[in-house]
Length: 274
Length: 283
Image 1 (tube, rainbow over the protein chains, first blue to last red):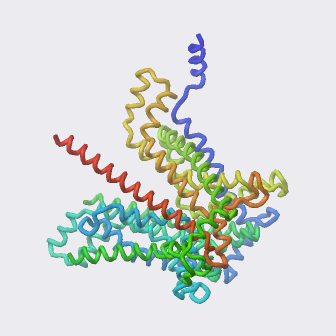
Image 2: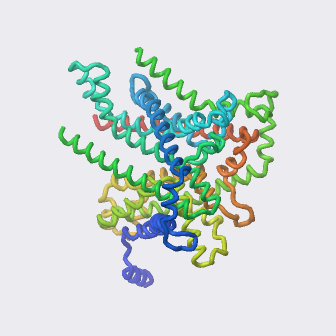
Image 3: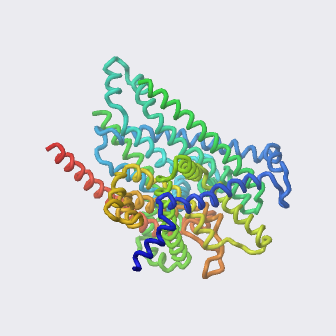
């Protein structure tokens, strides 16, 4: 008797698997979408909630704020390029069966990420101070070294996974058909590893621009990146200015997303010819 | 041959440079100096004083509590989300996918600020800026938001690889949808759920920005909740890494090394199994 009743009860609300996604969707809407709209709202209002362009005008007329943008882009570009220059050959060698046979080495390159990153940053700073590159005298160099230390694993991983998929027969064919080492690299290996490079750049550039701890600790507060500036506004309770800086960051993220999507589509089109 | 030697030298050289700061900290964890570079005699004293230092132990406890609880919440919510989205109509699935992508590509500090602005907004709307909402629950919320999309993206591929007829077969054989979910679907995607859980713990353990922005008075204490990241940041800002933390680095490194060894054994085991299966198929 009881079980029949229960079954009838169940029929009123029949369980469907897609209902499981509803709490997730609501959660994302509440805590991802609404906060982003609030950032836009705060970026264009003042302390009393009135509409204003103060933050926008202030950003483009204050030299220190524009400077933050330039310095952030400059440091992020340098970090990305250095990471790629070190990480690309590294990933190539790691994926080459003739050079490296055990996959444990790759895990070793990612393992530092499991040690608390603030602690690692402090360790890097102490080591650099010991060998004479202290943040007080060489803020830029020290910051750059710290960034490369932190983001190298993020470059190695995507590059390594694309290198594993390299079409070896195409590379061999290229050299059989008379291409020299440089031609093989630029015409075959580099284009094939393009997706890995893009995701490596995405993993390094944005996080470097918006990082706070690394630049703060390693440059002893002398280099102000986007992250440091937003943090400063946060500690001053300046929501409106902070929100506007965050909005610029969001815009840069959006543009870079758009560009990578476009280039991915282009790459997909290019490959469909073959 | 030249390439092999050069490649191996290059790999090991970069590996050495990458581990150098940690190795130096570990080496100097056996001497009681304030500044690295001055050796003042071998001792295990730092390992004793590490456990006597209340602030570090509290921060460590907070870090673990938040990491585990936020990972559990985001694993349940994220796995449910992934399963639900997989069986939704195309339009809704794509909406959820896009919403999941936003926090993954977004800068962490922007996410932290946006959540803080949400809290400030609610505060000004309902409490006239009087009540401080920041505390344990906002901190937990921040960590869930941080790790949730990664759980979703690690469960999703497992759903795509799954045999879709298993669930239908279970229903045909008399399972209720709920029973089929727990007996068939969840065991099939369990590896994805587990890796999502581990990823969530890793992200939470390492996080600084979200914690710094959203921390507040604890449930049982008045001072702001400190995690390992925020505690270390506050002490290393102007001074070198405190001696006790060098001992902590050694302990964490040993755990990480053990994990790496475990992973490599597991990988070898899996590879062997895969090879065995291949052999059977060939026969």
